[in-house]
Image (cartoon, rainbow, N blue to C red; front, side, top):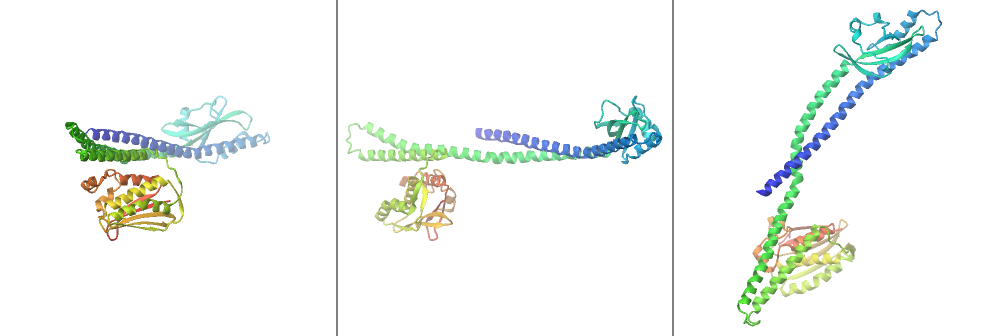
Length: 426
């Protein structure tokens, strides 16, 4: 119950972090898109204003080059005609701010002329202003009249369409961000749950590991304690009389020592502190050396070990670790084969890799056990394993050795009967 609360709390915390991250990403992304759209729309308007400004200044320059007898109204007419963009309105003021072309603008501007913002100190800067309920972009620049007098020209362009587009896009963007944020809640939960899944699995495995290790350690310790207490109850007894109890105690001590060594091996493998002493080794020679005593041992039990070694190359491995791997697999094969059963050790080259197969015609492994065979402390028949001294750690160690060599190990059913372990080494 307590563990479930911790997991749930961590899940909610991870979900919150993911939600904040998603929200920030999409909000910033939306702000960037909105700003780019706004800038793009206003850039077109700004270009129109700048173009009209340049044309009018160019016309003013040409008028100054005209002969003095050119009438004022003709020169002004030419200047106004040069503003050929129908969207742009221009208002001409003298140095005192008085409008010179009031009769040339529409009735709307004549009626709202006093509400048009004008600041001759704010020259050549494009700004936004509002006339009534309408939005405009405007620029004021200094010029010279055809008579050579200083004047100020204010260009206005209605941007109501652009503002409407920007406002609509902003609303759509807000709705989109709201939908995305809502979806991000779901996504955050899924991501947080998936991210936490390996941690929960590791937690469960650690708890099972501790429980199994405690159980495995407690059994020999209990036996040792019981036998020692019996010896204390009969201090006058001779060693010969208690030899069976002493032998049993020593066997349990050996079993306890091996179990402790196996646990230390797995702990080092988990912590990635196992140092490999790799060297070039002829794998066939190594396997031949490892199997020699097992061939004799198997013969004593009326079992047969056959070698089919066909990999003549050298590979870069830790010989001692591969020796340990072969010992585990051979020991396992002999334990689970009966009289007259056969064990084959095969080496070959396939797809540029070294393949090692250990086949037996023993009792085999069930389909369910194939999924868990490399799990720590997993034993298909616990009673049988206890009789043979197994703790369920051997194949876990074998798996870790292969992983340290960046190889793979798989187990499957033999075609006839029994089991096949297939090891691939680079």
